[in-house]
Length: 141
Image (tube, rainbow, N blue to C red; front, side, top):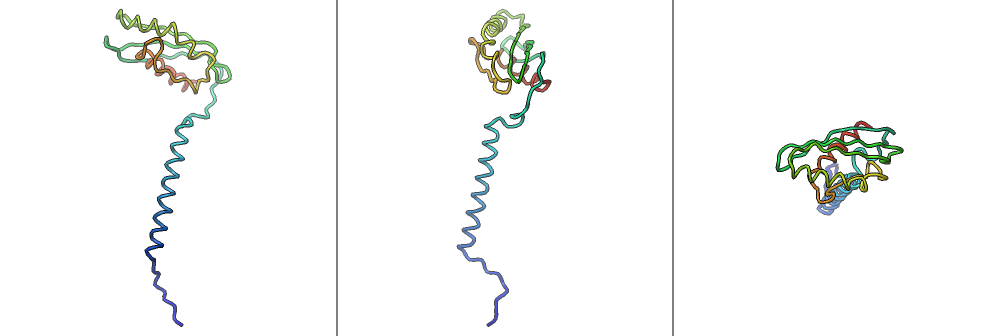
């Protein structure tokens, strides 16, 4: 009996191989998505205790705006926060004041890694400046 040394791949084997490859790709994409959802890069970062300062920038209808943020961190939790707006435009100044009167309730007592503000007291653009400053503080800490 002579054996045929030429490998022959059946249609069924090709189909099974394609299915396995597709499943591996789907699982890899799901794993990356889960990793990103769970915090992605920096999710397990620990922050050093201390007081940190940073400026944040954003664009309002009046132009470029800058704010200053100071956060005190203890065991990864914000224990104190200050905000100083630098707007000269009346409307921008009003939104910065609204933000300043409400942001502490959304920041103090929260884990640094979990802070994500969108709108505070009707102020969304100032919040973008705060988040910009927060990213700089995370990098410092």
